[in-house]
Length: 212
Ligand SMILES: [Zn+2]
Image 1 (cartoon, protein in one colour):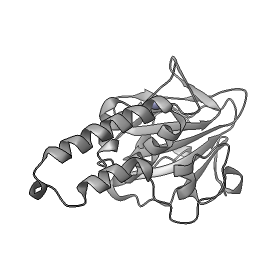
Image 2: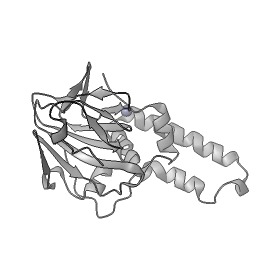
Image 3: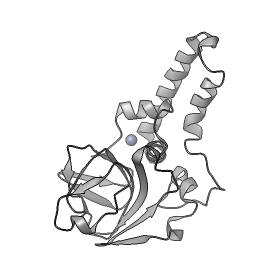
Image 4: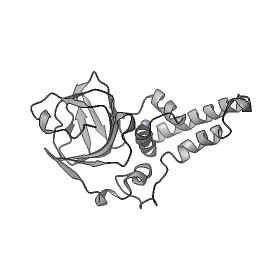
């Protein structure tokens, strides 16, 4: 089963109204998912047509340009784009500034490492790459806010669902879950969290890496 962002999220992305961390995650998914890329382009076209029908005085002069640029330049590079990478698609590479092998990971214990992306945590969001050893389990936790995960390498199981490269997983404050990385290789994910996580398992107090 393939896991995609909802139509609402794609629409918000096409309209340019997602916060920067979420826009980056969706742009990265679109670079891996032709179906959602097509859907977002259709939404973009509909949005452009609606703007065309408004009287010019009603919209900012550059509104259409900004909308149309959205899909082409979802995450403006802050430095020259590093060369192609098997794990990090272009929008993400622009933020990370290097390939996956050049990342300096911070060990968090329990077979988990993190790399914090240089995106301000305004709005209470934290944006990270997380690398989990094969077969490792993330302690059971629930959320104060939403959590959005995009798999970049390997995969994990959460409940009855398996998530592989390109898949998006969302969790809201009602979810208490404990994802388990696949046994056959490390799992690397892009994770955007809002608010603090509440760990409920015995290892919870040791693992504070999701906290903003
Ligand atoms: Zn998709």
